[in-house]
Length: 228
Length: 252
Image 1 (cartoon, rainbow over the protein chains, first blue to last red):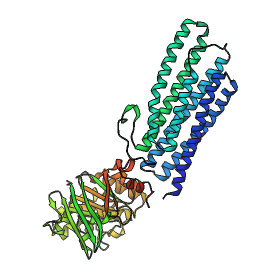
Image 2 (image 1 turned 135 degrees about the vertical axis):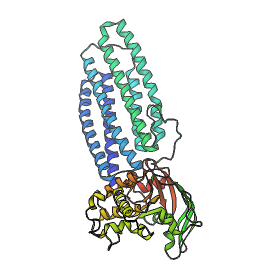
Image 3 (image 1 turned 30 degrees about the vertical axis):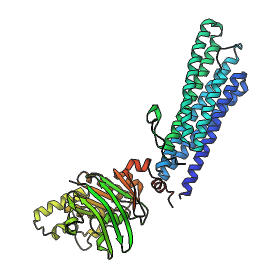
Image 4 (image 1 turned 90 degrees about the horizontal axis):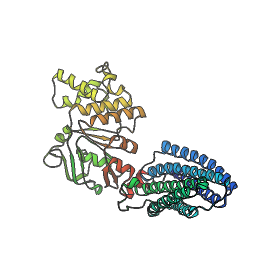
């Protein structure tokens, strides 16, 4: 047993999970800030993002060291490759949270208005996707990851609906166009977070099953032996 | 040109101990096949069955079939006939210490009664060139002994010696384990070139080496062939848990 190598893999896993927690928290805070028009939370999201960025660099460095020094093979190689890609997706999740926070900061300066879009519902669906994608990583379970992929369509539909109703609102009530546009952008940011959650799930499937299921290729393959 | 090596139900014993158990596999012509596995798993024994070296050990015996192209290794063929078709390179370079570089390469041919001096010169040059050694030794062919070369050069000299008899198959048993990284990389580059003309079987403990030089890899464990597949499959997503445990260092 390669103890030092295993310790390196464990450290990589822990760092990624901590980063995942930060990214999840940033999205939740940004959505909460939207609901409550809370500038303080928006600033917390910005702070979260700089911690996420630092975590991204740390994880890349550790992964790079493990690749260079330990020459991993098979499931370990797939794990490290998956971690580097998930790392990148989580960093982008942090960026999307910041984008949402910036929209909220803009909205707070405008009069509050009722908009025909259920952002909290969409946020809840997206958060659930991120959480489950991270759970699938923790558990090393491809079935959990597969369930995340199936949730993506739901969020896509929510984004499409938001687009239709908000554009209609802009036409009907030009005075609130800016608020509607901000809400539309928030919906789009949330949909992108869902895309990153989907990517994470695909990377977990690659790690666990050794199958590349991106872009609906290879998704039909029956599950093989779980490696964790 | 290289030829396929077809192994069927091969068993090899040392006395009562069965070191190789019912191996069936095909090693393709003009490809390199790596044999990996922990110490004592039977990989060297397996390779030594291919050129009938196993039977030189007292109390050792073999059952099963091996075909090298159209030659049936264990049925009506002499060991000498088999070994004419197969070159072998060992872990430790073993040039004939008292012979010059030239004579080392020409030894096999001379042993077979080959006497044409001009042709011998050509074959020695061609073999040393194929072994990527010619330019380093061409000015000292008869002046220097094989043993005076560096370890990496000695190993390439042994490869040249094996190639001089124009085999169809090249067996390599840990050919780089005694060499530094530069010599290792030269030998690996050489394997890459040589497989255009020969069928290569390489036993190695170095999995990175297997992944670099071989198109196919077989994993041996306790005398059994656990998995045989394309090298990229073996090292990225093996089918058998035991293979994965071994190549990821979780074995044992």
